[in-house]
Image (cartoon, rainbow, N blue to C red):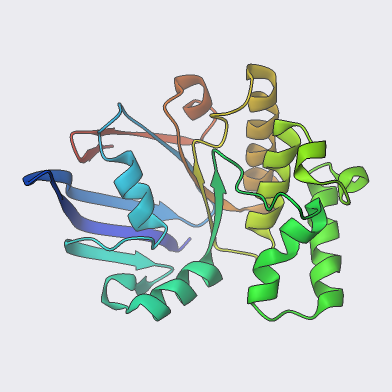
Length: 224
């Protein structure tokens, strides 16, 4: 197996109302291809900062981050965006779907930016909606779908560029217990059957327990 994520002594400090806050204090992390990892920790422990760096939405102040073997800490904004779009699929707590756009068109969105032909966009998006159990709902708008169905659309959208890595930030945070379990079943199936690498951040122990490896953030450090 090869490492999708390699963090080496990653540090990040913010200035908050004139006070320096050390959000990450020397984080080391390796995630191999095909792993399913959950990261938990109390509020303010550094989970969100870590997720932003893993997602190439922010850069560390010190240390190295290798994403699929590429050192992204040395990239400019354009190259960072290209690495992010090519390698990572995101799933957020709030779904982040386009309100006036059908499920299938929402899934197609990353392919539009990747200049994929319309026919191929539709084919891949329809296949993924079928994969997540929404073949019958692909022409529905988000407000015509339940929260769990909206998150399934978001997962299909995250997969459409065939990324090396799925980053899920509190993906069950807006869902009830039964629907949360269904979404975690889907993640587990994508990981086990399709070999997709997943890193999930959650504050819910029962959600973290569904991952194959669990880590804890405390005071800007990752406990292995």
